[in-house]
Length: 356
Image: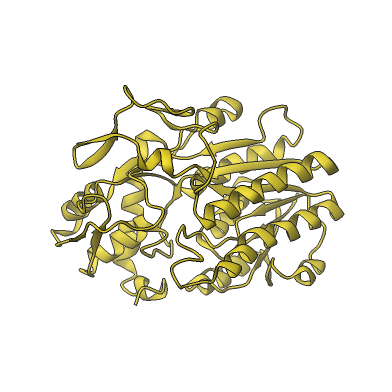
């Protein structure tokens, strides 16, 4: 089987490549990456050494896709993954749209021409911000816990946010580009008979992630805590009670493999893919874990709100489990320890990640 992975030098793309090769030594992998992300060069040589056909190109540029070979599947892992993209000054709104939407359009046209299937890695940030900001919460064990007895929103339960949770704006510019990409992918699938799968991922985390304050927060926090870099709880009560779940991208690869093996399977084409409640953690709890692992380090506070932030974001992956007999295999503690060991072995990692 020939597979193309976009954004292959990113932490998700590179992990998918290595894991798919482990699953099937006969798979032939092609990858394209523009190498714009700070640190992405770190993955280039190892991928080439593992016989991945690596092309330096940009999915925003149609002609860069013209040189690609025909493949059976495209896994789209190329994106600007920050919820603050387009509004925080690191990138323009037009750059965000070109990366996350125009790139998807170009890939869909590539799939239309070649008949390839597409697996789109999407995000939890396609879900509406307003009902999450208004979610009543209490504080238990250093973390927000939703109070659902008096708050009823479709798709919200103690297991997390399901696929039928509202996706009405505001979402963030980032979330809007991913939601638009999802809709276009599904429409291309219907119009041209293409196999399409869409995986809405929670926070992905593993060793070697290029962590920054606006993305890759688990890797950023652990590396910064170990190095005694300044850290700060931002927004809400300024105590770090915001909760996110996390998932190892190896577990995403396991689902992607199942999907590629069953292109005509009659199930829902869109599903949440996350660690769920079992892997959910607040920043304050993460700090406590770091303190036990590395020794105590002070964390500052800033209660001023940050754009698009929500108190609790945990995805319910029941549909993926039911449809694909899939569930996470890498536990939260294992993910954190893997990142910690990598951080200890790579004292320069924050600088490589662009955290100056």
